[in-house]
Image (cartoon, rainbow, N blue to C red):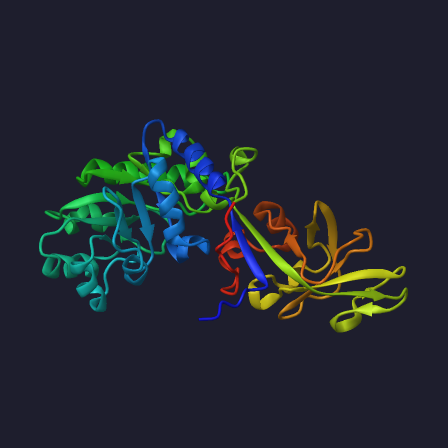
Length: 349
């Protein structure tokens, strides 16, 4: 079988991933620290994340759907996997078969699990103010969960990345639920919640974006390291005379005779048009400015000061999540999970 190399590759820094998890774990005052690996590990490969975090000591992992859970089988020994979206009617066969726990999100899901869960343990999500998934507080405290074998009782912070009074309101609500609903463990903090301090840690923390290089709050700056490094191959080097333009709409005019690197990457790969005007890359440490509009499969970088660059060379595209989020207006989550499927993820640091 012929192996065809991709003109895109994603370098994944496993040491940075582990370092980020360890920094987050140390914030919990003894609480366990898990890892959200939904959306295929935020685009970096759920199995790859698990392969590196399990040896570091992580034992609790979270996916969104049963299809994501099935893709991770068989699980490493001693690993716990929970499915955030709970169980719909069509999920029950998988939920009974796979060694993973549903996180029940409604009285309907609770009833479904009581009937078809064969007495197995489950997790439960209680809504303390997000109004997304989860039983309402009055439902949870009103007997809807009586007799259920709850392994971990969860809630989710809606505004933890901000200094919002909602954080303390949700903390108080979750403490009240904890006092009334028995479970083996209790879990509230996501990445930003971990940064709010140990009061939010309870028994188990569930970081996501911070594992992968995102900065959820200022407290994490200087501690969280970049994990994902997109790289793209130069398709063509060309000279653009002074006064001529580059790309759709003629939005960039060469101020002088310029060497331009045309690169195999574009908005079909998750590098969106909003990066025009401030995007960049490096080649052998030399910075390059993105010029013109982003096309579906092509980018143009001003490379006049880089003697020796040629077709087939690789550029490292600037992709610091926090910095790029501020410049583009996109969330760090969108930037990371939006990277397309054409990247070769076999390149590791």
